[in-house]
Length: 439
Image 1 (tube, rainbow, N blue to C red):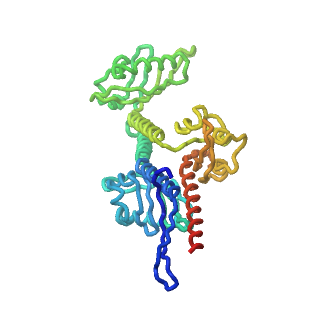
Image 2: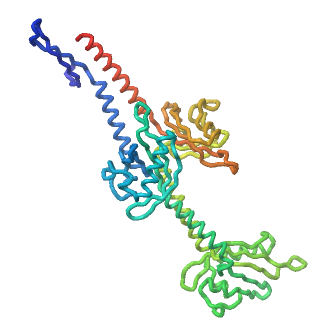
Image 3: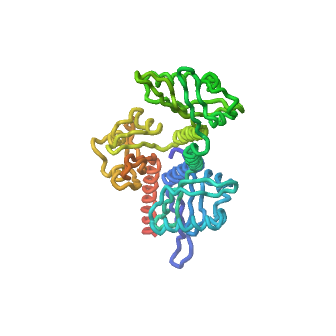
């Protein structure tokens, strides 16, 4: 003994004489250091998982068969402007309007009855302040005996994307109606005199009456944004010199009220018998709303890129030849910065041919989501155990999978902990059985 303390399990039993009187006490002490260390490891893992659940941007929820929330993460609670503890124990009908709660409940029942996950469910969700759009995956939750006891759901807020899609749709409809509603103006430029016929509607698009702008190129040029004038004239010159078949450029114009208007200018030169241009006919279309929608989409993509960058899971995308065509920074840190263009099976497993089984291959074959656990080897030669999920990222026009995305998570620590716990429990079981034999 070195004087160190350690945990023990103490079991006692009375010692009786032939008359049945207690004359002593038999005690057995067992060193349970290994079990305590395993329990501590499991607790640390649980704490790590809890931290992960509380920080990931995805909304995660666990609902039992009765439609009662067992647990939700911070993101889910934040969407409803409350806390996880306030939601725990409440039913769908406590949180949502009757018709919406009933629809959610019936959908959950179908998932539990089928035993199969349901993915990419796009639907509106009412919150105390507004309505948001989410994309949800629902997975049957099973107990240790395999019985389905509820569902676990993962929801992503796609409100920004839906709004962008709606803005684009509305913009396209407006653009289609533009020729009928005065959003397009016609112009006719005389190259010899620099006179230019300007449709009164074109002037009105900038807030002016017909008589406020003279029909001359110099006058019209004053309303082109100064920063765009050089590119506008360069595009016109390229067309007039025959370098481009059509004059076409999107540029800014100055409105009478001081705001900026975006025009899409298109024109075609009319040439004489020698090919010399003497006239250009064209149109200007107000595309301000479309530009605003494009900017909105650009910002949304930047936000999405930021979300992807914050994800701690390994993510990569493969084509039909198992070439890695995209990978996030986590994957590049684990397997090397130059993995793009390489085969996934050689990069992640050091194999010379496709893995067997291969969930990427399965997803290309049937278009479904597949999951499994597998061993991978990092760029440093370190072996790890990954949980992987493959799903279709893009399809051909005929519906066949074109790209497959694989999301993987390092579960090495969890698997080691599970193994340690099993070994500890087996030791404990053997000792108990030995004690019972002694008694």
